[in-house]
Every structure is written in structure tokens, then in C-alpha cells.
Image (cartoon, rainbow, N blue to C red; front, side, top):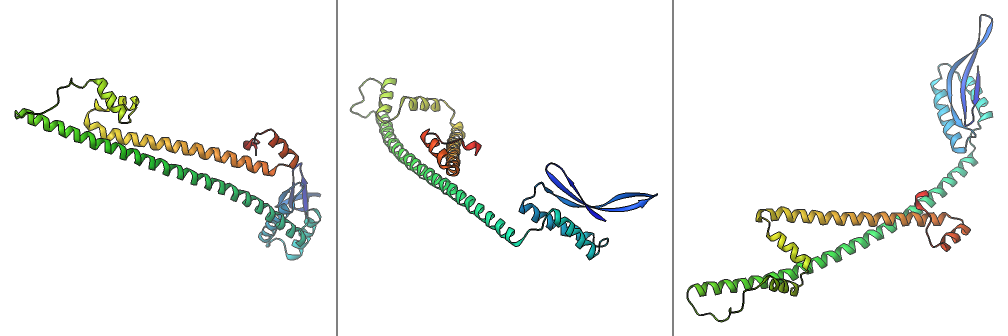
Length: 265
């Protein structure tokens, strides 16, 4: 019984083989695969290989006694050495350093995204305040118009009763007069056109139209928020890429006044 190593360009395959003589000829019989490692193996590769090797040898306990398993491990150790305590410590230190750098960069990116979200929330609050102010303005205008409408209705009732009412002798209000009044109240010509289109719609359609308008505004805000988030992600990736550049390449990138392509980072 012996350990066979098959080496390819990228891996080393290990198997357990037993020789037997059949009909006067020596034949090799494959007993078990003991795993494989990259060629050449790193410390992490060797740790993983030896961990799986012990598991495989434990499953072969009914065919290999302790002495045979010791010979197998010695043969493998000569080709794929067991990891020493110093190597394990060096690997742990390297991984800890990589983790520290990775999570520090991730923390910086998360902080930048959090700041962007706070700015977006502040902008949304400002938009909400501005919308409330506009709503209050139009509510005040509505109250004025409602009062004037009530006065006009009162004049109608008094005139129909035959009472004497002063004023009201100027020419009837024209379309141009209505437009001038609306413009003076702060409406734009686009607002006036929109109001006229709404006035032509059946009244039962107005609630659904209002709901559709609100949904369209929310979708537009969501689209703008996603666009701002994507831009923030791009700049954060660019900043992280700059941080990884050697000093001379960083100087060139800054001199070009353009961030490196974050998509290739």
C-alpha cells in the first residue's frame, strides 16, 4: 500500500493505492481518494487539505490501522507539509490585517452613504415644508375666493327679491380678466391650463386622478433618490480605489482631475 501523487498544471491529487499480484502480474488497485490541493499550495490550502485528510482517514479506519495511517500521513507530509504553529500565526495575522483594512474601508463607505441619506432626508423635509407653505397659501386663496363667491350669491338673492344693490354695473368678466386674476394670485399659465383641464373632467374622476398624481410624484422622488444613491456609490468606490493606489499613481490621478474608473476596482 502506498500514496500516489498525480501532479497537473494547477493541482496535486492524492490517492491511496494498494498493489496486488494477479496471474503473475503486479496490479495497482485504487482504494480511496485523499483529496487535492492547488499547485503550489498556500498555507490556507494546506490547512484545509489536512483537515479533510483526517476526516477521510477516519472513515477508512476499518481498513487502515493506526500504524498504516501514520505511514500514510508521513508520506503525504513529505510532499504536502503539515502547517506549523508559526505558519498558522502568520496566516491569522495576515487575515486579521486584511479584515481590518476591509472593514475600515466598508465603515468609511457606510458612513458616506449614511451622510448622503441624511442629506436626502433633510432635502425631503425642506420639500415637505415648502409644500405645506404652498398648501397654506392656496388654502388662503381658496378662502378669499369662497368669500367672494358667497358675496356674489348674496347679491343674486337680493336682486331676485327686488332689492336695490349698488355696484355690479361693469362689463362681464372676460377670459383675459380671469387669467389676470389667476396670475396675480401666483398661478402660472401652465397652472391655469392644468386647472382648466381639470374643470372639464367629471367630478367622480377627481379622486382617482388625485391619487394617480400623488403616486407619480412618489415615483419621481424615488427615482431621484435612487439616482443620487447610485452616484454616491460610484464616488465612494472611486475614493476607495484612490486609497489603494501607490503614491505615484495617486499623484497622476489627482493631476488628471478625474477619479479612477470605480467599475474596474
